[in-house]
Length: 89
Image 1 (cartoon, rainbow, N blue to C red):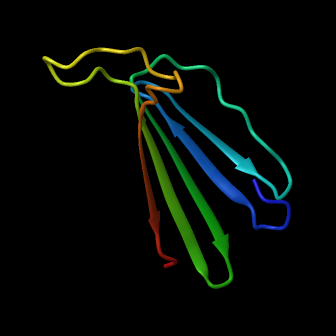
Image 2: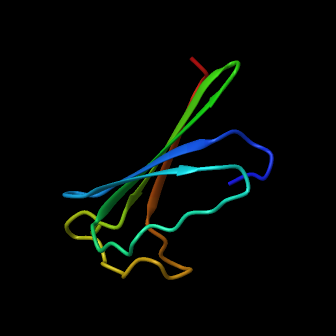
């Protein structure tokens, strides 16, 4: 995370497992390898002006029927990534 930011609260959500971590400024965190097709990372940062929230969704699922299937994580076939950032509340 950022060296001079506030404490971050992370949730890594898989189909059947959820991992939570608290990350202090300047620290980094690792989550275990997961073969789940959909992985969700949620970040919440609480500061004096309010709470900033973000969600990152990675979809390693196969494309629609009839489309060519290419394994993800190659430079020419990255997985679908969705990022949402919510304003401070």
